[in-house]
Image (cartoon, rainbow, N blue to C red; front, side):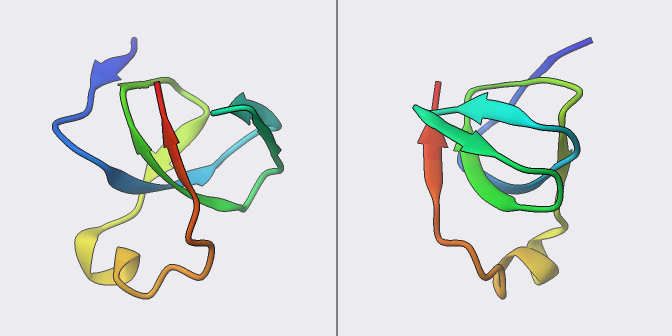
Length: 59
């Protein structure tokens, strides 16, 4: 079941996904705000600060 994010958070893409007009491959990091599906796994805040891919996608 999808859950609503409270603000932009960092996620790791678990499967090939089309997010914010871009195709993401498994393992890529994305900052996302919106309805979160099963294809995204949240990165803890301490790890997110060092995320390499500075990509923002919104719903």
